Length: 197
Image (tube, rainbow, N blue to C red):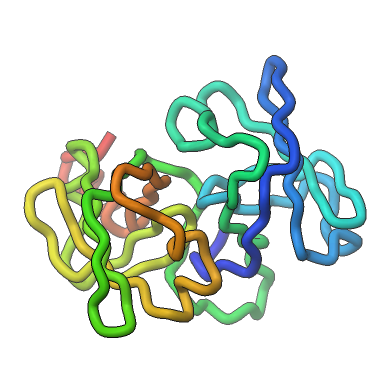
């Protein structure tokens, strides 16, 4: 489980093709404290650590993960939002996330708004039904509050702190991001017999 509070921005050091695709991730984490088999959210996708080194860790992504996320487009040098899994007693600063990406959203626009950046995203149907004004959504692993919703589009503000601590400072229209809908929306839809996917 995660909260969408990013604690490092890593960079893809290597992409290793195979039956499952491997990624070596450069990180500022103290990797001596990362156990093999630990879960780390990489751009919002929960991945299992398979090896570590002094300033890196490696993970693998299945064909399913590559097909439902932006990971298939990662190249050497790609910046990636990282979050370690929750520990009992950790502060819940964002909202509860599973690290299971639902879909890929696209940035439609970006403009300054005060000191913040206002982004508008477009999501594929039927995921738009699970996004509500003032609700929570995770984009590339970042917990964000939805400002408004119009059809398949919704807006969020990225404050200066979030710009500085995540990949959103460099994000631009046309970029694709991993979307995880609020877990509560998923279960409400299921109870109403209107599964999201």
